[in-house]
Amino acid sequence: MHELAITENIVAISLNKAKEAQAKKVSSVNLIIGELSGFAPECIQLYFDALSRNTIAQGATLNFESAPVRLRCRNCTAVFQPQVNEWTCPECHSPGAEIIAGRELYIKSLEVE
Ligand SMILES: [Zn+2]
Image 1 (cartoon, rainbow, N blue to C red):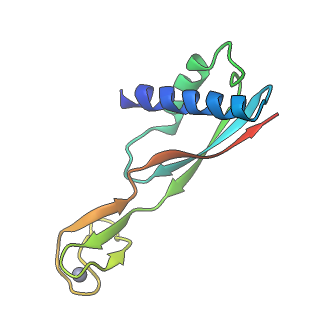
Image 2 (cartoon, protein in one colour; image 1 turned 90 degrees about the horizontal axis):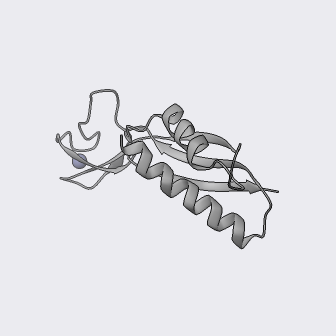
């Protein structure tokens, strides 16, 4: 149920930014979601709808843009995008790489009125 906590953040940040911009309404929130984040977009939308009720973000649409996984080889520090179930470094062929992208979830931009 970690979607609830992250959605609380998304709502709070959206409302803050909208206030800063002196907006009357948040119409959409554009999010970047990493392929390894494990977050379910439909779950986040549900929580968002509930948490934003009676705020200026009520009824806002969430748009999710998927961010690919990127790994860094622990041996030669090459950065690469893994194939499915194949996390071997393409440069030095050593196994075991560190995840440097793909677990994130953040707000890319907001549209307000
Ligand atoms: Zn390597």
